[in-house]
Length: 67
Image (tube, rainbow, N blue to C red; front, top):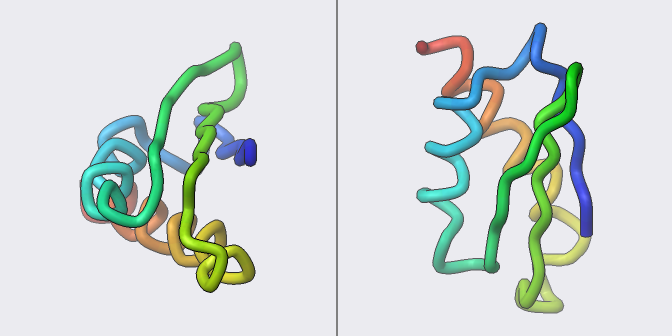
């Protein structure tokens, strides 16, 4: 699954913090283009499929705001 986070809102540090925090729940990778950080995850537990992207985004946003 691919998730996109705008660089004007999210920081790379916040996203990497979320990737570390969620590392036991899925495999994560990070890429970027000019405007977005692109996060890809795989091998997530099926019971988490409906919520993992939202929870990851919340964690990444919080980390981006915190600095």
